[in-house]
Length: 164
Ligand code: MN
Image (cartoon, rainbow, N blue to C red):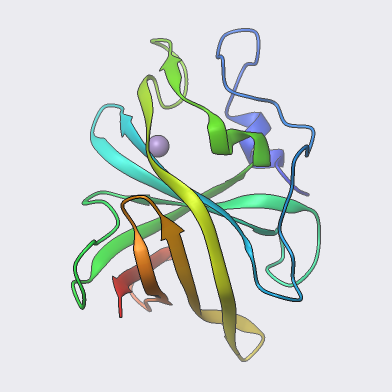
């Protein structure tokens, strides 16, 4: 079910993170358009959370933020591949979340918005009923251009992302 993992990991009386009620979705499957965010997350290890507004089952289902932790950040230069580890779907309201997740909570630390904007031309490549590759154009302040994300065979939830 949508957001079950997200809700299980958090106590909403202890963290300022949104519980989510699916407001403000702009995702449009017909044109492959939606919103993205990159959050700079100073947790136990600094990483960047990359999120795309998409259906939970990629092609169907409620709209969520498909999410990846990118240790080195989303590459800004072409052809440099960065590891992206898929994490639990987040509610769409998380797109504007910034603040402090208090000590003792999941992901404790400071969250800042590093970049946000829209994506367009979203395309999905499916092989044997499994998503293998994503392609999209980012229109942000720092991130602009065509990006590719490819699932690796190495570990579950492991992807590589690069700018074309
Ligand atoms: Mn994070």
